[in-house]
Length: 236
View 1 (tube, rainbow, N blue to C red):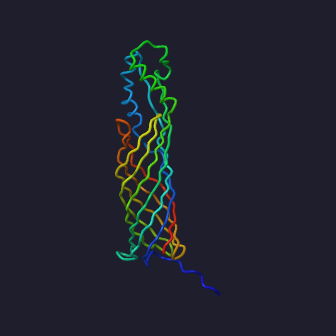
View 2 (view 1 turned 180 degrees about the vertical axis):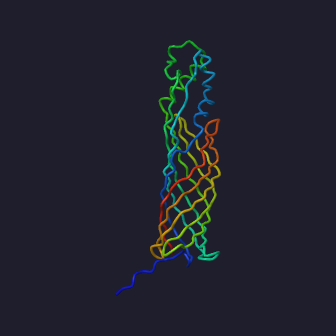
View 3 (view 1 turned 30 degrees about the horizontal axis):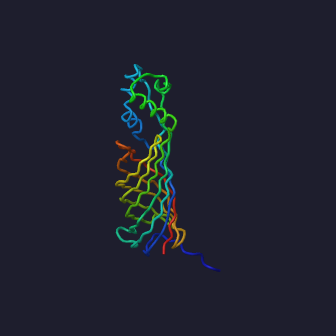
């Protein structure tokens, strides 16, 4: 009989590895409503037109699909049985949502008004926002990370990780676009299962922090959020 391949209890032997993951962040809140109110001074516009503003922008938050690739090196079991690793990760987050405006200014036709040019221009801009209510944000984070992995039982283990780096961003919102970048930090935790000495799969949660993004003359803010993810690694 041929003996089955032994199950790896941890990344005890050390060495290089490559891997990747897929995950999602759902309902990431933004300050899009205040951005639009500040950009177009809707309260002032309503006063110019002798209208009761009473309107609002609303959205369900931004949903992101997250893809990552990483390469790193493990130094095997050491501190209290944890295998420690350092890895470089490149990710891609694709997020989008719709923002809608509801209020009396939505139904005003600028062509039928005899007001100052700047008021007409603001109303035309508002019309363009209503016609293009979507927000699309692409984020490419490049981070250096530390991970500790420890066996629980058999091939099952747990992992903890943290890292920081720089994120490149491309934002398209309300018919306008802007590129930016900034500091990003993250932490992760979950379970890993070692099928063989060279192959493992993992799943867990990841917390991410990203600096505010420049958008025109303002800043677009994203709330810190938790994502779920699943992935795999190949050890050499």
